[in-house]
Length: 125
Picture 1 (cartoon, rainbow, N blue to C red):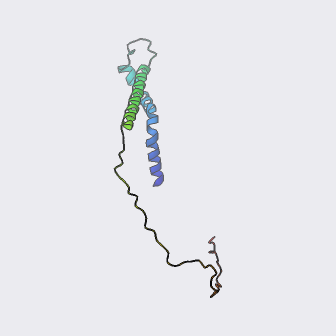
Picture 2: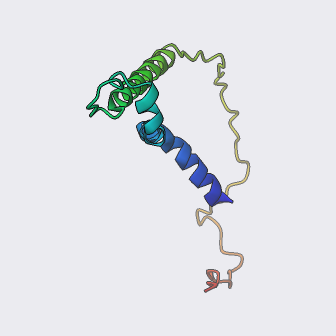
Picture 3: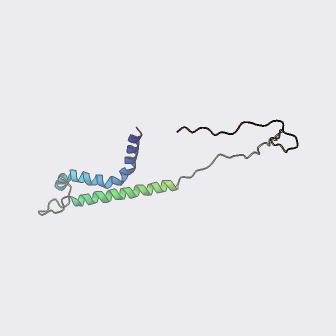
């Protein structure tokens, strides 16, 4: 399931970079119809254009549209301001005083001896 989402999201990220490819494939699919109906030079006897003039118009229109979208995104990005409404109060922490001392300064004689030794946990390999 993760791989499916990775593929879908990756394709969505890469989709805008293949925009001109989609325009070109749509042109190739409909090239015969474009040559007969839309092409400016369709009435010429020796037409070598084969609808490429219309393809060039479509590609420039697509590129202008992409640039316009990028400019709009830049403007929207530049207009975003974040106002931080949260304030933090730095209150002093209460100081805890230890009542018992954990250290021995050898002022008294030793009462007992610890026979236990530190043993690290066994590894689970």
